[in-house]
Length: 458
Image (cartoon, rainbow, N blue to C red; front, top):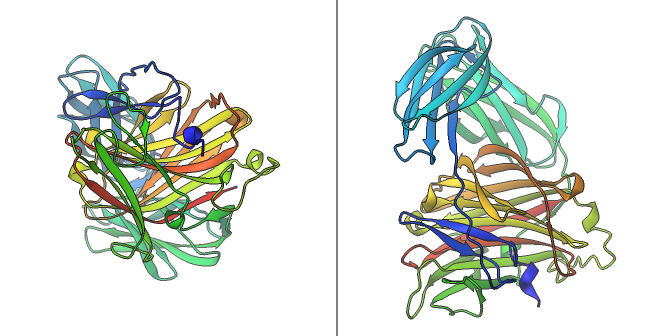
């Protein structure tokens, strides 16, 4: 089949391999013979772990944050906390852990970092300080109808314990399904259709606990295509230096790749698929392999060719959900998860990658400017274990590509970034999903396993 548009970007997408030695160009495309080199994004940021923006907390308020910068080679000098425009705490170094005593009330706070080159950046955090203990749930509201996965957002205050809140969790029908450390909770929970009795609970460091019951009615919103890892329609292409043009079948260009379905162990369903990238004779480093599956439209593997073009124009929301078993995080350079929609000469790519060895951060793809953009959100993979990845994207007005959320192992990051679509130079109508593995500097043989892979669309 003509696979040029089944790739994450064929013909349009260039990426950066970030590794300990240098920022090296990797390309996923071969429409043109001339490759443009795009520099890695430059940014500085303050990531605040506690308190949550908009959260309700007890005093003293625990401010926990980390500052990063790539604009100053000397690094971050210090971090501080402002409360209602007054600087109340400063600590040297790249991390902050400060307890700030505040009377009950609503506050505008800011956590700021200063680097050694005279630069600075900050993150605003609005909080409400209470003298009461309890759990304060922002989402979902009690007795409402929700979709699945459902985003649970809550904060906790423990006025009776000077050591503060230790952790928070969610129960579904009396079963504990997720726990997060600290006084904030932001997670996606998979719920079965129907009425579900859930509870959000906090546990403090003094042995106490409190909870709030939340009853929801769950509707299956959209159409879910399940067990995609078992499909016989997967395509694969290798991409190796120096030009990173496609090659197939394996082995080619000095490296090899494969995918093996129906693996029983490790597996959650008994039918996982093993995806492998590795070296071959005359091993070439930095080899990538793209695995792509056409779902809707042309070459549909789901019996949904949409020949009349009546389905694709109605789609606006997508949820990519999969479990990935990482066998060796130390050689896993990048794992990439993509949703692609092409129709009527327009291309939309929700490209999302866990840049594991390039800073352990989530990157998203800027379609028009053809570059990766760091979200500043940490991507910490579980080694020798299952990682649950959920990505939500939306097609907005004018076919805008909206990155909504990324959830890794129960922790949800709200991305809320929008990029324009790009022009597709050939006629193509379809929805595809991609899974990509990038080889490291030695092209070490690496296998990951994918299970319970689904795409929900509506």
